Image 1 (cartoon, rainbow, N blue to C red):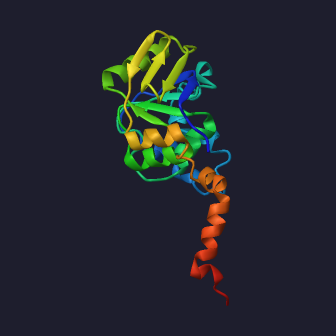
Image 2: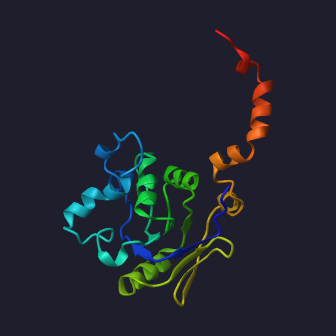
Image 3: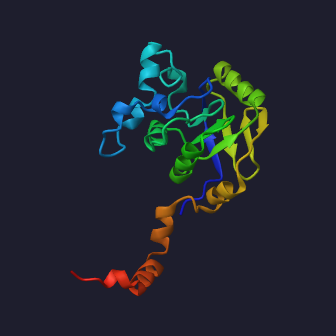
Length: 197
């Protein structure tokens, strides 16, 4: 199991409220058999509309790990492909004003912490990243603070989700592997596991 306590790297600002999952990954990319390659298509339509001026296309944000968004990020349909696409682009944490509940849950399942800050603070972080794209950025789930160079912002996350990250329990597959012998022992006791045709 993999604990997630601090995510550090560069940040990428994405301004706008109500950015839904269809914008994050358009529906035509949902036919994939695996999630491989989705990172290349993240925000495909938005990026096309602004001719290379989208933050996810700008050279100064390539390799960024922390996305700074606004309100109701990830709303719309419940497609798991949206956080999968963000993860495969390179996003490891998201700071926002609020998140759609299913999107948040899908992010937790992938090990992507989504923390919230008040609008004034997300705006300050976004503006700072516009002016300083190479800024040192960190999301600390132990102190519940986001720091960007000298700017420190308090953030929030439900305590249950926070503890899942700090203890590594967000990783359900990892838990199964770590407890493989217990799972096998329990499976032998289940009457339906011995059914025959």
